[in-house]
Length: 233
Image 1 (cartoon, one colour):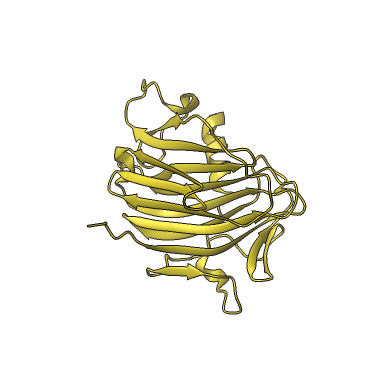
Image 2 (cartoon, helix red, strand yellow):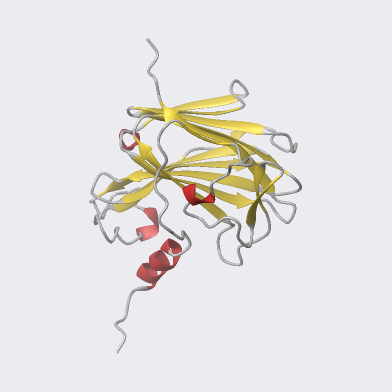
């Protein structure tokens, strides 16, 4: 007889299945992907091309719906602690958002979300995902079950939306600079920038995830760069 599992445990198992793995290992730093003639799809953990994503015109194009709860996703493995991560993106139509995740060690022996950057057409929303063994922590996410490996609970800190005009379909450059417990997130360099200091940022980073709600016209990602952060004198 098949053993019963809770609804939350089943949901967690289902979500994990959305990130297909086929043996990709983190590339040495510095990492640069321009999606040109030498594009190596094996560096990503998401199969490319697939139903929603392909490389065309020198950029990674994702469009349409995944058919499930979440928009189409693309995963890239990384390895490092103090990292500077940047990429460019642009909407090709009336798409709604690009949600960029940084996953890393949860501090208790597993890997989970660390920071989320949601790029809407009228704002940027930041969400910090820390972790605790305290089942009664006030930031525990929706009474979510503990991580199956580490036993830690995900905590969610939602920051107020930062209003800005991202309605045009121009290229935008996003950069995250991690150094110790600090991260600086920026869009188009001086256009918008936000600095956060949280203890969980001082953990190794393991995966990057782009969740792309670009509608049928889709959106493009290009010029992914990852390098070790060099502290300023």
